[in-house]
Length: 276
Image (cartoon, rainbow, N blue to C red):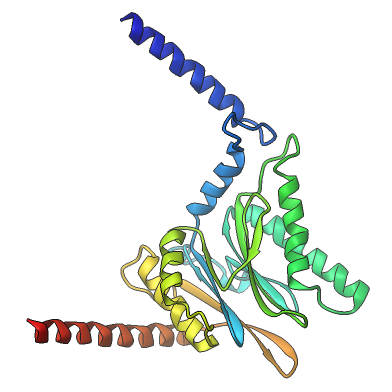
């Protein structure tokens, strides 16, 4: 009984210590962790899935739509998860939407100030780094909390061409050939590692790959245009074109994937039956 009481007392002490270390973003735990930043990343992990794929001739962003059950939602107001930042850039978000609105407004302001001053679009990485400096500052300033949102950025500039970046609540960012944030992102990244070609993919192949990954990772029975939204960034006549695919175009991609998947399944069945 004495040992049990001592153990309960020890647990109470540990609980108080844990609450002390995760109550502020500026306090490290003895293990060197910032719990509030980790909690922000956990919030992103429960958000709708966002997928980005870099192609030779463009960039694809595909996002899960979770507000389809609300028939009163005014879709003409704008996309739920995809934001245009400037002439040559856009982003998708996973996490707390109100936090995302603050960051995207800041991104647009940075892009417009640069364009006003230099009469050209801001380089994509410079835009990403500017907002990531802000996100990092919110992890070490007293009285503030980290932004509970991760972003996927797609863009084009004259120096590096088409680019895809990802940033997280800590302020870290990196360039990627393919990336995923939000719910089931680990499964999506594993599938992308298997399917993405080392020599790169075309925009059409990237679109088919995005549909394939979402169909296998989203927690839905059947993929439809009402449940996902796809945006492409390409160059045409020396201008950047950011296009949101219509429902018919998305359904066409899904139908093509289903035909291909059925064909592969039939081939596997034929191979297994011939071996037996």
